Length: 464
Image (cartoon, one colour):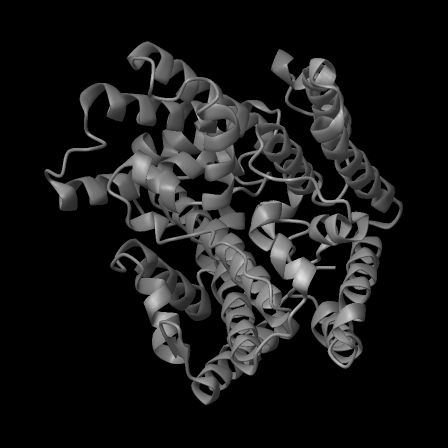
């Protein structure tokens, strides 16, 4: 079950709102936990045992790390982390080791829904307890709600327990303004996903159609741009929906995107794209490896290792490793040359970065390294001309409009998209309830219409 599905929009969410809100505050947490467990079972069935096991192990591990004799805490911490990681390693990586032999045709495999995200949530909690920046919580039900909470359960944002611990413990009712803002933000995200992301996805599908002949340059660039827009509006739309749903229940999730396509450097891009994941790897991998505190060689090693792990997190396949290698090279080049801090030629570099971003998403979408290379080759040597017939068929007026609107993400000023939402819905913290409800109702209604009109399309990041 996904947020844009009719089952969620017309059955699950209304039932949860009707059941949770009338309850006394003391009963709202248990009701939300039951609803979140039901949401996971609805979408993943028996795999709920996996997330429940990770929840139990990480909760007990944090208590052990905090209260075990000092001499054995490092060993307890290490074993705990390995046990928490075990399901992720078993389900996601063991079945695909043979891909590293360049035998790229592997059998399809089913992963427990959201396994990477709830594993990262659990790890961050145990690591923070070990560092002393987070005290262990003796309330297993509070911690279970944090891990199961359905808005972020299956595709983020990656929320630290410390960020919502007090909100879980005190369970204050959301203000009318918060509910209005949350519903408007949800509607905004739904519209982004189904009106732009899904429509651009149909165009991108023409390029990555397995039966398609070698494309020419125009087909390759149009398809790559369409996928670039699809993945951004799909994932940022999901993040908006998750943040909005959380606010309806008085949880404040961190922002996950900040206009990444207008970046003028690779470094800035990763400060703006999937920010909660970037911060997770920065705090728990990059900095512990030395970061930029021990000379350039150590910094480059930490950077390449961190991005290598980021690539493997997305998938243990050659296309993901190529994608990670491209970005690692760009980030390292900027550090060696000092370009990441240089303010010169910003407009030219922003244009060059836009081209690089479109180029870099090709292996991320490709099933094999050969497919990625074929598309890259076509982008630069395929010859210009009319796009292929299949591409022209998919470039309907609605698709062209969606791509045109989506392409504005490359030229919006910093925070422009958020300000566009603010203009419709609110002014800073001074939330205008009627305006917010109107904005959310319009965006949500359009999104629902598109969701009903179009075919079912799961969020892209569910596969991770």
